[in-house]
Length: 218
Image (cartoon, rainbow, N blue to C red; front, top):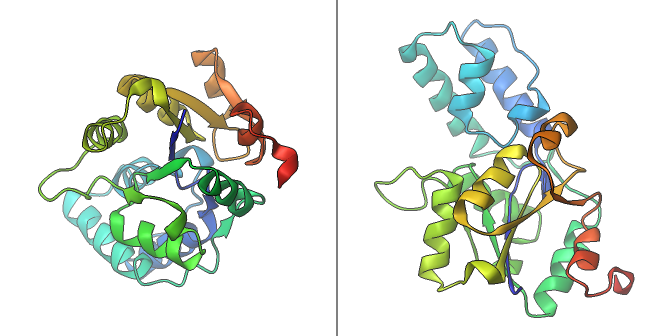
């Protein structure tokens, strides 16, 4: 197995602080009370987050929320987002040992690349993909994985997706590849009972043991 697809939020980086800060600013600037974001929504699209937290808001106001949030979030310095302990060492080790890695996330392309760059790991991935990575298309995660596999001629047997949410497991299965669940992320443990068996890691470096390349080396 030489190709690894990584989720971003809750798998590589804990982005909750910046997302909640910007959503709080956005909602209060429009006269609404800020609400905490449940972990189960982190990693979902911004539209889905807003719809779940504020189902009463009309479409026109929702579009204003999305616009303010995106313009603010896209220009942040992401000081409230952090690499999970062991992520940098693990993906550096994988890169040095010939693994080809991609980021596949529901976060838009611009902030995804800025966060990866700001955290010093952008150059460890072949590239990153988001729903808006292809002009004129808004793809779901499974569709993104399938398209990347076609573009890079990747066999399903030679790829795995690493993510923290039930939706990540489902996307990987829909795309026809294996999945590894990052249990240190935002996922609800009760969700994983519904879709057993799963392969789990409880720290980023556990990935090396699953790939059988020696976690003790980092």
